[in-house]
Amino acid sequence: MNALIFDVDGTLADTESVHLDAFNHAFKVEGLDWHWTVEHYTRLLDISGGKERLLHHWRTVEPALKEVGAGAVNDTIHRLHETKTAYYESAVGQGAVTLRPGVLALMSEARRQGLQLAIATTTSPVNIAALLRSAIGPDWRSHFLAIGDASNAPVKKPNPQVYMKVLAELGLRAADCVAFEDSSNGLRAARAAGLDTVITPNGFTAHHDFTGALRIVPDLSQVSVARLKEWHNR
Ligand code: XBP
Ligand code: MG
Image (cartoon, rainbow, N blue to C red; front, side, top):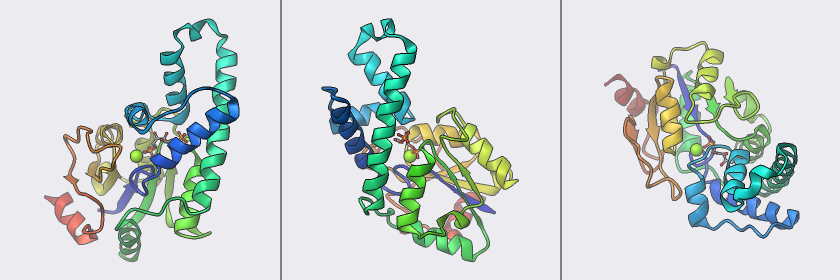
């Protein structure tokens, strides 16, 4: 076991409630009478990617949308997502979320033992930076040998593209790594890339199907490198 590959949203931190607030803020700024409830957003999380989620919602609430020019739709979605991302970045930068239990300890122990760390997420680079800059510090990027995100892996989970990209950048086989995820889309992407995957569900994903997971644990507070090697080797 030479590397640990971490998903971001819902795995490193419980970020989805802040993403939800950011979407609702963007709707207000745009003057749209949309408001996503926790229940509705929980369902929308079956779609990976904020822009993709916006388009899916727009299509469901406005079937006549297809008459609107694709250009106009894309422009509005980009504007909404920019406003949403700016709100998210500032909220997380002000400490709106902290890392989930055990995440920092496992990362530190892994680095001390010479394992590589990587990130494989659907979200935008600015969101990763906002979270890890406040959780780890200004040198957070040096902790990760590879980072796959929306800017360099546009085909979103459950497609394995982001994990394949990270494995290529690490120069490692899937068999030499373990992934960490919180959602069924994430698990399917990691499994499709051949990765043993530890699942830490959260309030938004507890109902997901985690068939094929290496282990399902409430959080990483009881997960050490030794325990991971034991699970991985077995
Ligand atoms: C989960 C996602 C992301 C976020 C929103 O990412 O699907 O889209 O919900 O972020 P992860 P964006 O793979 O880390 O679990 O609006 O930047 O897409
Ligand atoms: Mg996730």
